Picture 1 (cartoon, rainbow, N blue to C red):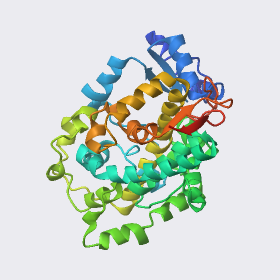
Picture 2: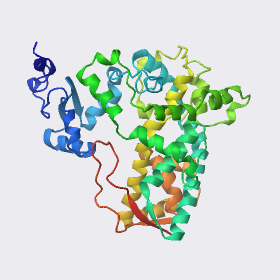
Picture 3: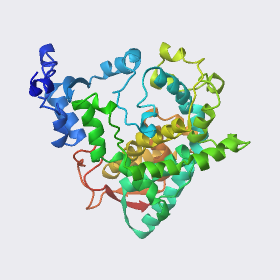
Picture 4: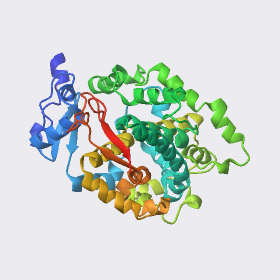
Length: 410
């Protein structure tokens, strides 16, 4: 077979089935598109051009992109048992390979049965004071900014808040990224995880072009310095070992302790389930998971660290971006800001988990932070507030330039 024919052998897969999509090129498939637009712009461009369902190529591998809400619901809930596995990409690094996102089959089912209960409403309620403490530190930082009349770099401030929460909940480490410059190393290493680099592109493109090659070469998407940092951040010889040796480990109510507790019990977490557990509403139920309830899940320290690391990867940039965009929208829509201020102010300062839980779930985390801030500060546009926001190429959510707004005390 001619080499060119080998690398294009699947390129008629979608066209022969009447499914539209961008034209693939040799080796890259349709990955070439990410070099032309930012991910949000590219997603909207393809949606407008090809509709709610279209085909792309990850190298030679055909993949279907679905933008139809009802079909997405079927895939993620009703027919989820048919779509459990992600792409099988092994890097040789336990920090990544042992995370829930990269596990497959029975390993994924068993690990998920351990991790899912840690996000029940009862467990989240227990972690609420930790989040509130982090918001109070942000409050002090914003008050200084408001008194001095300084502009606020929203993305950095929300990123610092998110990092404080993740460090406290997932890594058992209290930091103050707003005021303690010595802790900026935690934030900088986290940003390196999120931002694109040549290692990530290799991990993504090599399996696309040469699927079997990853079985022989091990390439981590993390630089050695970043991996070393996070292994030391939750050092097996310090925090994890100390937690395990404590007689009263129940005093810790963070995510790290919940995962450590899971090491010492089976996958059957029924005794810890909360009556008002929200997991069924979020994930749905599958018979496949029920089959795992009697299985003993042997979690290693690498599994614990991988779970905390996934907490960082999945939660840092996404949450910081959500909060940044929320505050940005409030700054350019003062009527909405005033309406939200009045709504939250009706709670008369009682921002307990129960009061927040009565708000729509999709905005719960956002309102947890905003509820503390909107009653004290007014956000407004300045000359440096870009409208509309633009996104960086090759990045998923990072904006071009920072998000700057004005802040003043009410």
